[in-house]
Length: 357
Image (cartoon, rainbow, N blue to C red; front, side, top):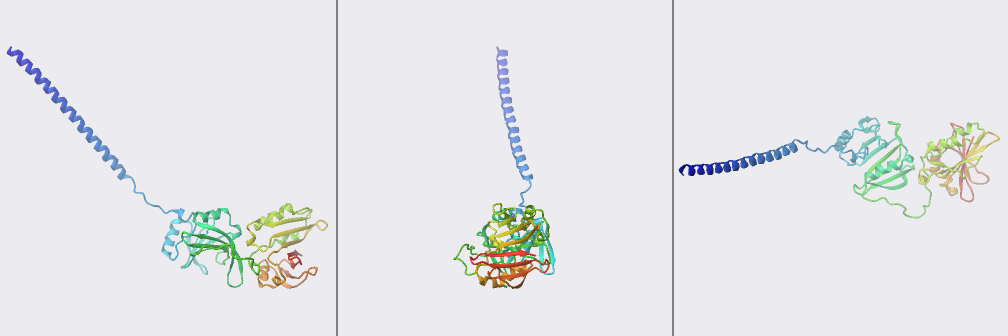
């Protein structure tokens, strides 16, 4: 009996021991698991800590690829900007002074920073400004206000293209310009602080028409020297395309005449609205070129100095006043080519220029 009781007690003790061990096993299992989870969390935090800190790199989008640094007076900031943009290098010229120049940008090859004006320099005339350039400007926050004219205060009048940034209060004027230091410069964009939005279409018809004084919109006269079996239509189209102002008018042309009209939207880049080449089959030559000139509307316009300046820009100097079939006019001559240009105003108010040898 005593032995039986001891055996029962032994069994109970074993069961109790097994339960305690099991309990301890569970606790031991949970502790490593907890530690594993904590270690995992620490590892993940460690990984995040190992990640490189995000640094704000120089953002070329600010320049939209090539625009100058549009913060006036901040010359130090402009220098840092140009270094980071890495498309233009600082150079010094006798007349231009210190500028940044490079061939990488498509449009703004050069940039010059002064106190009041920031200049962007381009190798294309403004007549070649295209939709891509305008998109570059509009992406930078500049609205397109179209074309107008600009005067240098010395009687010279040129076409210009206007943009304005309402947020920055900066107006951009693009106009043709040349410089001896860098002969490839064809136009400049002036960026000036201007609080006032540009106005368009104000007022009625001006008392005087605007005669652009420094546009080179006359045709190439070398075709007057050639001998052709027929009207050299393709050659004329290529010549006019190179000038970029006029398009070939199929309806206005025939076997003896090639007519070109000023492109829509290009009226402010030229004093002409049409150019016609007349072919003489018997002579196998272009006998003369006729230009339609809407900026001359009255007799007094023939005496304006702006007209002489415009002819001079195209290589012609005044010779004398000369009528054309009783129509008042004036004769000009190109001393290099020997070609003459006779401008006259018809009674109906239409003005033409005939160019011939």
